[in-house]
Length: 143
Image (cartoon, rainbow, N blue to C red; front, side, top):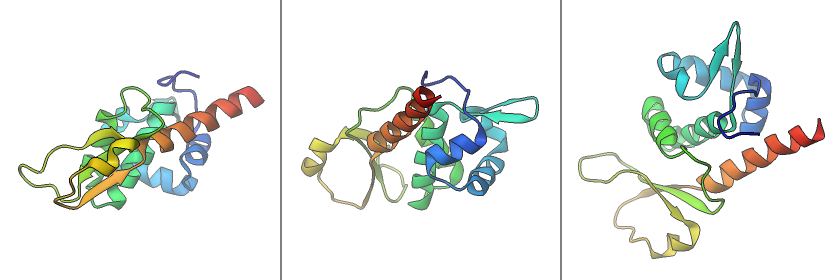
């Protein structure tokens, strides 16, 4: 299955993302103006790719950490052009203010060397995306 091939249904996307279907519906409806970043609508059905599911899941994690929904979506989208290394971590300042720096991806082996002078959000972006990719590909093989 290709990273950007949009052939996953809403129900499958919710299951792969580890979210209840109703939660995914709410998330999608909250971002009507930028839905092209994480799905495609064909006729009356919505379709997702592996990348789309990862963007939604990482955005969900960023929102839980205090980001606005649109900021969370943009950050996730910007960092998921390609599948991340399975050990990658997304490190972002906990509070957004001038000069605090942009979120970045690092290897988990480098996490111990980070200088934590301010609070940070650390999301295991690689593990989350790797799990989603494995689930989608396992279901494809099972069919």
